[in-house]
Each structure stands twice: as C-alpha cells, then as structure tokens.
Image (cartoon, rainbow, N blue to C red; front, side, top):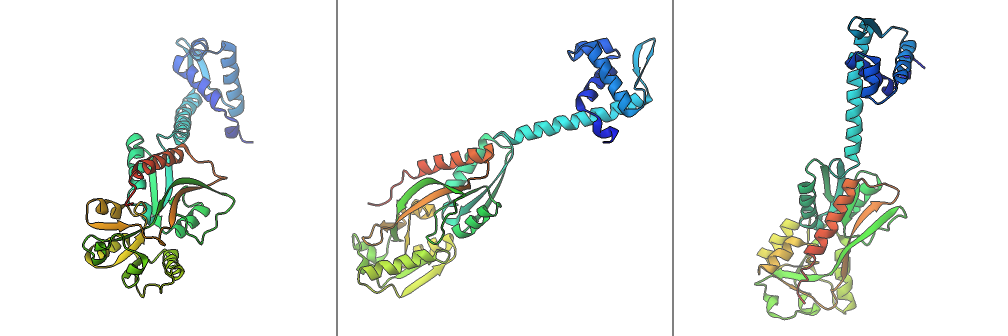
Length: 316
C-alpha cells in the first residue's frame, strides 16, 4: 500500500485544524479532541509521508513548505468528500435524484402527466425520463432495467415473470364510442347487430382488441365487421371518429381525450351487451430492485391521480 493510500480523511481534518489555529492545543479544543490525540495524528502523517509538516517559531506552530502544500490538497480533498456525501444523501431523498418511467400510450395522456406535474412541483430538482410506447415494449424495457416503473394495461399475450410486482391502479369496462351525430346514435342503446355493418377503428398496436371484437360477434352468431381501419395513433383515431361514421371499442378511462370530449358532447359512448370487456391498469416494478425515494414518490402520485380521475364513470 502506498503512502497516499494510507492517508485517512480524519488525519487530514486534524492536520488542517492545526494549520488554521497555529497550535496543537487550540486545534484540540476546536475539534473536541485531546492535545495528545492531535499530536499523535500529526506524527502519524509525518511518518507516513516522510517529511516534517510543522515547525515552531515565535508565533507558534507553523506549517512547513511540505505542510503548506499538503494543506492545499487536503482542503480540496475534504471539500470534494463533503460534496460526495451530500450528493449521495440527496440521492437518497425524494428532493433530488432521478426516475425512469415507461407508459403505455393510452395512459400517457392524463394520469402520468398529472402525477409528474405534482411531483415536480414538490421536488423541482429531480430528473425524470419518460418513455412511451406499447405495453409490450414498455414491459421489455422494464425487464432489461432501462426503466424503473412501468404504467399500463397488460396485453393478453404477456405473462408476468416471478420477479415482476404488479400494483393495481383501476379497472374499467369497454364502451363503443362514436361521434354525437352518428346515424346509429339515434338507436338507444345500440345492440351488437346494429354495429355489424359499420366501419370499426382498432389500434394497430393492440391486436388483442381486434381479436376480442371478432370473437364477440362470433359468440353472438354474427359475422365480424368487414370494414376495419387499423390506426397507429390516438390523436388520429379521435379525429377519424369525429369526422366520419367510424366507431371504436375503448375504455373511456384508458383514452382520456375521448373521455373529455364525450363529456363535452362531441362523442357518444354506449355500453353494448357482448362488448363489455373489463380492462385493468397496473404499475409494474421489478421485485429485486430497491426503488429510490423518488420512484416511490412518483408511484404514490400516480395512484393518487388515478383515484381522482377515475371518479368519471362514463355512460351507464
């Protein structure tokens, strides 16, 4: 072991006390140690470095050239040590640090933004990274350790691993959504047979939605809809619904923009017997990973936001 590796921070701290106070006795009183302990620390440093660090003159104990050079580096080293400790302590608190979250598209519009807004208002120094995509893609990012938290509705095809913890957020039932002036809107409530000949809008990224639609018509003894538009984006889908006679199967809660415009009178939403699938949304984390306080705070905000926003129950 080299001499530099044997230098201890506490010895440097005691050494600087002598430099600043110009006396072993004064330094000992300032740092609440005995004079003998301080003298022993300085002797240990001098033995390790092989050079004299102090000399006595008429004014007291004065650092030698070696001591002055060491004092310069010791101050920098102790300051850096202090900054490192403070940085690590901040990382362990919810007032600083970072969190990475992956959100499925249908939940990115309202729940997570509200939670993030509240979290950042309380802790403006945190760093947040948001990834958005399909539930399948976000689940892969979680397993690879590229995100800390996943929020979304589980696709049917995904089987959770034993190392994944799932925290329930809410559940909702599917609705058939259409524009307010749609011809079928005059049929109250519409039945499955009334919807067979219409053009259906389904998410390109959720194949299970299309499968559920086809199976539901088969169970009712009806042919599946022949006219289907596969859409890749929620915003485009809303505009298609608003400007055409397309209909779509969705959870109003999982598509907040539709929820809001439905409440505003632009759309109509109906529960149709045979198409009332229950959807659930969850927070997912890796069990073996210790979540930072920042991540834990974000989860709490998401659950609070979900509980508040889910007070909207949709049509009956």
